[in-house]
Image (cartoon, rainbow, N blue to C red; front, side, top):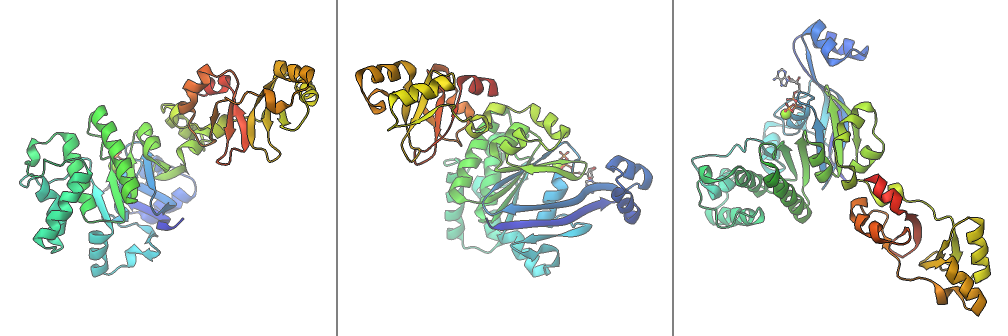
Length: 389
Ligand SMILES: Nc1ncnc2c1ncn2[C@@H]1O[C@H](COP(=O)(O)OP(=O)(O)OP(=O)(O)O)[C@@H](O)[C@H]1O
Ligand SMILES: [Mg+2]
């Protein structure tokens, strides 16, 4: 994976006595104590992270934890007190004025919570704005703007005055405007927080669709854990200017770094993020397709189970053999192959548990987990599916 942003030892301190603040912080004093003793606010404390090309990287944390301060360092609205930020390997704080100008125009765009639109311009006028400043020809920028307006689902509204639009539509304009520059990175600071829940859901979905289509790197701030887990390929959780954990939603749920993270995500909907591999177990009885029914019966008896998972020599899942069929096969001198149940529910290890709930409810046997080549990886039981959610 290619890194697009690297953050190395970034601090942002507000106040005069920064050296004293730094000293106290290194002794382990927290943000509140440092502020009390020195008057310095530690907005960011030793931030180290990489953002990969094409990922949706979500930053979550309570108000004042430093989310906006960090993101504003990426487009040079803030300058770190210490540390450096690299964009495609280049230190952005070492850029010349011209390079900064080009960087902001070509590589990075921002979408704001309060939209930040020009109210005296209509929809297309807002989307075109950045292109106009770049000096793009009238026809070219019209075409580009229309393309973006269609992309965000606003076709037909291009001539509407901004003031006539709902909040959700305004944010679509904000998104279209940010995308019109064709930036590598889209910064989104709580872009959907001001919208009501249904509109918010639509826009989350729209954003994921657009991301898949355009493959932009998106850095997205929210204080809503459900939104973070829905959108984020990876999520960074911040507290008092520090990063507490960076992980995929799933890793964070199954393995929270500490109590703080655990409490934070308790409010999230687990079934939406737990995947099959987290609850998969190894079946206690596996038999090969060319084993004899007697052998299969013995295996099941030894393991005190009444069915076995049947695989080929190469571990390809073939079906389930239950004890009655095995006994019948033995009596009638049949092969395992002749009596196995082939119509068995299967799933992939990366499927989400929520997507197999319906299957789990009706299935007679635990669901087989197979890979792309139908190799048996494990099984998930009805009880485990239902108790995971
Ligand atoms: N210009 C400034 N001068 C002094 N302190 C500041 C300044 N900007 C931010 N801070 C402080 O830095 C800390 C981090 O603020 P920041 O705005 O980054 O938080 P946030 O996580 O974005 O919060 P919110 O969810 O409320 O937007 C806070 O303690 C804030 O008071
Ligand atoms: Mg903020």
